[in-house]
Image (cartoon, rainbow, N blue to C red; front, side, top):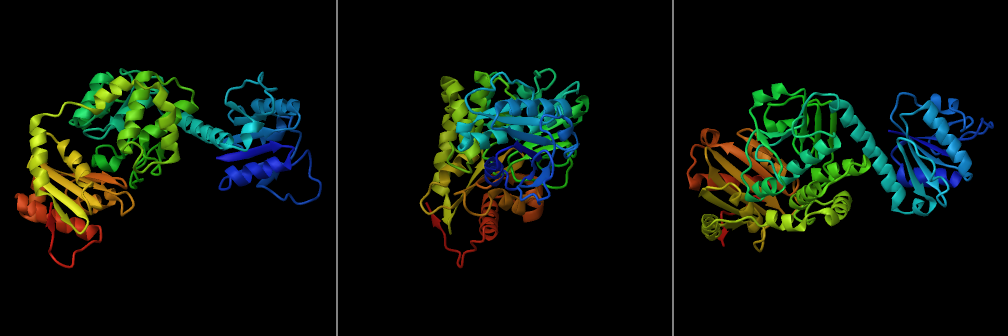
Length: 467
């Protein structure tokens, strides 16, 4: 994106460019005509009457541009905005005001910020919002004209993905008929089932062949590699996991520094001034909360700001009901048995549950095991149907958990995640072919040895402690 600074105040030029646009391409209005002196910066210079549309017509044409306009005389600011709107209607404009003297100035793609806010966080926030608005428009350009759009989530989707799809549908101004939320595997965790039920969110389980009935495909909180070749060239990908290579998309917004994809979609809604009803606010906040462990893990400033905005708008009664679903006695018994068998070896807490009725017990036990004294990593595994499911957690500052599970199991199953949490699903047939057996003792030996080697904590002896 290119930034035009249109101002008669040199201090303004330096402040904005050096504080907020250090790594961006900047063009500064340097006066009506060259005075024979070299332009000292910031950025490159352009010249002409700022009230004349021709001044802006030839400046970086055909590029995505944001213009920041600030003249000491409000009338000159208004004239420059009129000239920009006339010659470059696609340009996003941010103007500064002193005492609300430009309240009458209303244009599409225009935002205002007061001088009082210029020295604080507001200017940075407004510039970020304009950048986000550009992304929103790009998504709408790709998906807007399609008869229908599939909003695709990973199999057994989590709250972050579900909320993100619901929000994108709102941004696109679509409904469940023209933008259904779909997945290739049903929801198993009780909290997620409760979320769908209590918030009345529709989720359709489809087969890969069913994608042929959709004109456009958007992936939320997932990238094509996780889907194992089912979707190689989606139209849109929006995700917060580390960016994967080897696929093409007409639009992608990958922000691995964010703790949740729901944060990205919250920013989309705010930038586009899309109404966030209570149901959507509740879903988005739960998506952020669940993926960041209540803002305690892999959290960015953006996550905190999104959470703070959403919280006053949620239905707290529904949120409590989602977070505290009924837990059957069988799950508690599985927990008790597993905790008696957990091994703590060189900072790795590992437990294998054997056959389990409910997959959600596995990640819950991984979370609990990480709280053991001396544990820096935890892994829990269990047999679910014809698969071995593995959940991994760490304290958040070591090697990325997603990288570890991909290295260990990427060749025999689906594996991925991010810095502090990850998951692998390995067909028992593939595990047996590579490791010879799926007996509990063999699974345990493979897991402990593999994880310790991959996280570079290879023990000098075979000693371990059972807690």
